[in-house]
Length: 91
Image 1 (tube, one colour):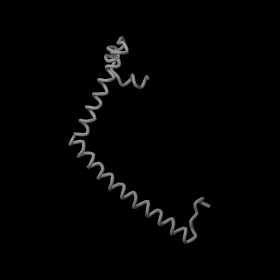
Image 2 (tube, helix red, strand yellow):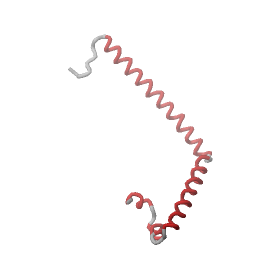
Image 3 (cartoon, helix red, strand yellow):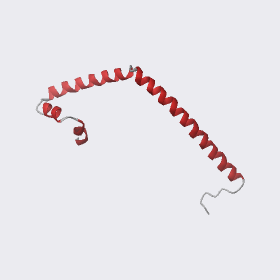
């Protein structure tokens, strides 16, 4: 619980410390509703969606380059193996 407590302000913790379980449950409901609202705002954020699209496009480029290099390595190792000269153990 200490990690959770570290995220919360001392003022907020002080304000809720003497509340009964009914009041605490009401705060849980309010927090859940806020989370839904935040998620809806995030999902409707055009700038965020555009940024995620750009990031996705950039990642695709890096993935394509990485996949190409992996294919080259695989091909080269297979070719070396065909030549009978693959030494995996370094002997």
